[in-house]
Image (cartoon, rainbow, N blue to C red):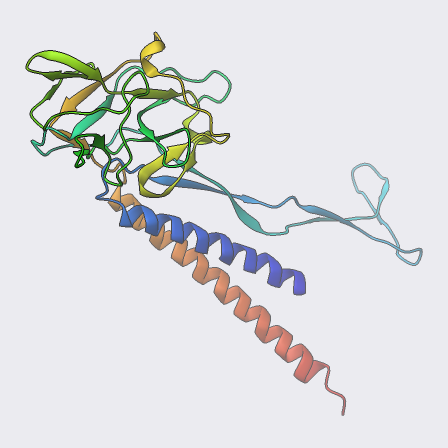
Length: 279
């Protein structure tokens, strides 16, 4: 009976966490460059129960004819194992702002070991050390003319240096070259991750590598292609209709587990206050 409490409670916790994840996806449905999170729910390892003690009479297997003391497998509940970002391309949204530069996926190799498709990101200077990465191309110029993201992190060029411009009167071609009066002054830095699901997702649409090392430049990898589109931003890849449906499914699953938990509670109440009563 008490094991049933823990099994049902684990299901409620897993569905609660899944609901929180889906709620966060829905809240960022209009956030530029946001990548929806996905979750996987798995069961804990089952326990094989066997009869113990010399007074127990083992059962005879009707097929093998051998005596078996095993009772059977017992489920120990479920848990939300991990969350992974869905790295598919978001819809392009036109803004006509020169500082908005959408990153568009081209041909990206698939990792042979994991089967994951690689991903490209803009390079940003992290405030502490190393680099951070983003798909949010809603850039702006700060007071000193440096190209920054909405949180003020500096956008890096292909050489890892900050990009400084006189004003927003510039052009960006499809290869990432920044042109001022038709003269190339810098090339926007882009990095490639062969296993994007291993990146650590942080606030404000930022990603970092697990060990803090910088990702390789996407320009140095032959089979990686991408383009840029000035005057556009990449929207979120959240499917709002499916997310709402998944939220309702998770809520119903939580509610079903809750009803089972209440049934266990009523059974325990009857066992303690009625069956176990001493007259």
